[in-house]
Length: 117
Image (tube, rainbow, N blue to C red; front, side, top):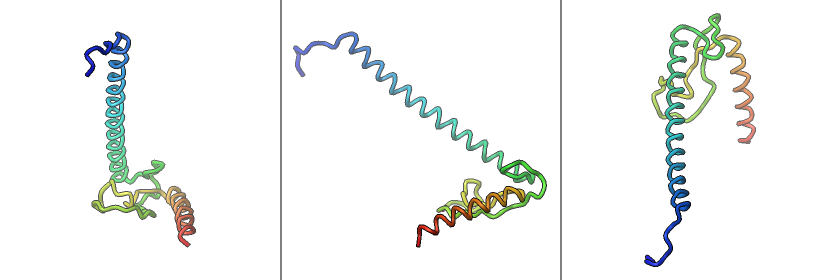
């Protein structure tokens, strides 16, 4: 430590303090956004549960022709098979949304399988 080094100026002290405040503000903003996202996911899961219980399509809110449809996914999942967090869980859907889902996943699986050959 140099005892004869010049002391920081007021501007340097202020700049360092502002840097610390900005770092803390960014951390607080990240925490706030994370908590907001967690709440949104919780609300989404509750919404899906209530739709499933009421027999409402999870995609379009239709009530006609709604039934439990098989998932066409194969994501790695080690959790409870019946969990709402399971990305491969069956879903409540109407005929129209089921057809759209089938077309989408047929295309996705075709693209995936073409890369495996």
